[in-house]
Length: 585
Figure 1 (cartoon, rainbow, N blue to C red):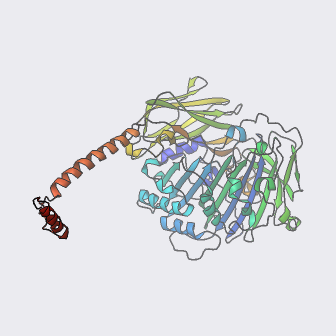
Figure 2: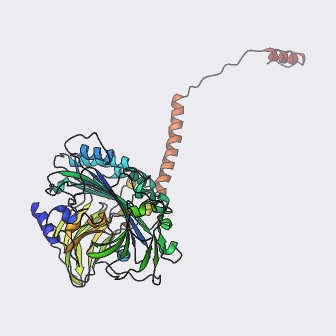
Figure 3: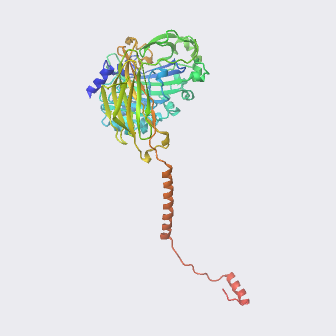
């Protein structure tokens, strides 16, 4: 098993340094000691005319949580602290996403998540029964976030061997301690947003969280909220460990259509609020506005009011300029309550063809009929001269029976043999298919992965209430280290914004990216449910009539009724009949 981890690490370049440097949510920065809170908002206009806003709240907790019971909680939410302590959680990553991030038009996000609900957890090696602990943990998280995580069971849970590694400081290397699940049909609404905001130290009453209004966030093209918990180093020697909670929320507003053809935007136009104050418990509260990127030497728009400072940031193999608004600075302390950041484009406001990112993918269903089909995934490498490997992971429900011998990988019309394949076959009604492959992507190429499947016929009790709507298939996952065009300065991580530490690089030659494809909607052979209804009605009628008649015959008592002797009326009648000469009654 150690050889497998080494193979994948060498192929992606993840073997350099610790795990945080390859795949971490953040580099090992060492801020002030004690509990701390840092919040920031990153606003980035997209080439498609949309505007992406990313909120990030980082809560650091200096506490030895594992192995002892903690009674005092200051900034770290008590609900999550008790979960980590009770279930021996090493890392926890949970996301709720509505919509799909369009990498072809929007570029790479800071942190992409699949549509629906995604949960993956690393447990401590002290956990004896991982499956039982995983089941109890999903039930607890379902109650905390008001979600359907209690529907996670063995039929949608897998244990990847190479696609997911610990993001924080961790000595756990046994992949059997990892559990991963996706609910692609999960509907994200304000019931999930409310408990997410309650985890913030200031809630939604102060700080940047006052902009998080459900009626604006869910009236957008894309919405994703996430919770990431991991251990990090407390000092440079990493002798002590702290806990880090990152709450991220990304939303994409379609300002081009809602603005009647104008791409100008403002804080009030996006969030219908301008009054901002830093959270009293936060040590940092900043707003970043993207000014330029690699394909734009000059700033294509004007930003007002003037920012506190302008900062150049190295992010995702690119140098970008950001206007910084520090809500805790003296310049903005008096005007922050009326702060309304506005952006006006200089040139013609027309939608152009956006530049393709280095790596993007798409997925679709092929074939016809309701018996057989095929899964098609196309992965694009748009780099003009650099080739790089990727780890591709596919999770398919058990009712789509894969034919692994039909797996075909083609690049530029030629077969592309993977360096490593891990396949775990599904078991009916027990576990799904799991397919992981290490594939080399040539420069400026499109790699197509095709595998055929057969649709199973379910029991009539296994169909959902709307069977004709179809069944959702979890998205595929693509993990890669993309080549960088610049070198990253690792000595200035502490001064850099939080979002630059999402996917850092250990030497600046590459940066880590994880992408998700679209979830698929597959139709299965569906019986005519009106016929079972008719059969049930007819059977119930026959049973009711037959059983009712038989029951009456067995329980009814037949008695002879004796005639009653006269009363006053009968005597009067007999007197009249006697006077008339008629026999008495």
